[in-house]
Length: 77
Image 1 (spheres, rainbow, N blue to C red):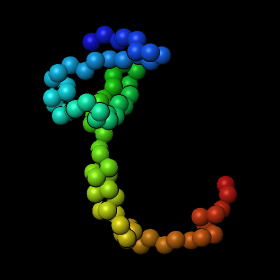
Image 2: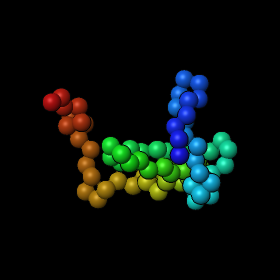
Image 3: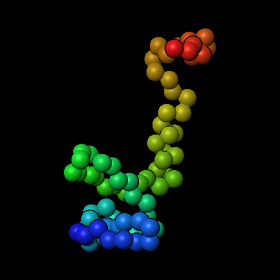
């Protein structure tokens, strides 16, 4: 792959194999993470529906033994 200029930014075209593996379509959002100085990972960003489903798993559930202490929460270190 080659890095190209696109306006004021740089761009890389994704090979068809990557597009197919991630089931990408025009307009989809992706997440790119830098794994090391010479490596990165690309993944399809979750859509709003998937994000809401992940959040719903935690609704109203706190870890066992959790105790909120207002004074401790407002302490300044």
